[in-house]
Length: 202
Image 1: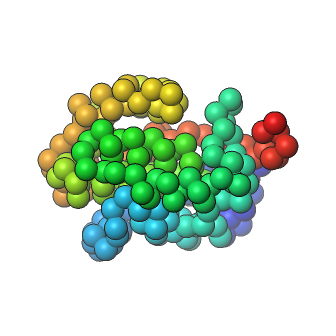
Image 2: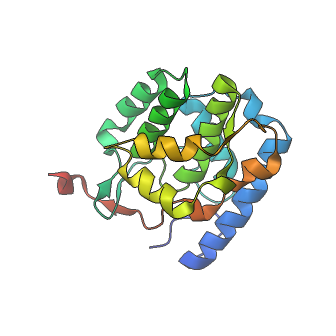
């Protein structure tokens, strides 16, 4: 199933290519214009604005909370009926140190608030919090993609693994555009989220 898009693309592979090209261009623009400095680090409102900026030329739902329940394999993101409450809880979570920030990041990943583009938006959001609170960001070139995806998959049950992985990749080079752009790499995000009906939750 090809997601509804503003580009009129009907092929999934073509859409994925255009999505990556356009979102990377928008990510550079967002960085260079200082847009991220206008956002409140750690709030869903900031994540929503990041998502809208990246994907507004591609998807009509850019920046909007999803209205479908989605899953990948056996992993199900937060059900739509609990999503708003989940986001309010994440907003209220403490972010004063590295461990708290990663716990907040894990919770946002479980919430998966958008139909598409969660990974890239949330990694920018994570770095925004790290930058503000501890003066560091993740150098994603130092994070093995397979290790990252596996650690994120396990993180709702045990977050030690993802914390160790990201802690080793921290850098104080917080204004480096190349470091920032590595987190936008599409290969770091999950493919294949499917919609499922609410009665399938039972």
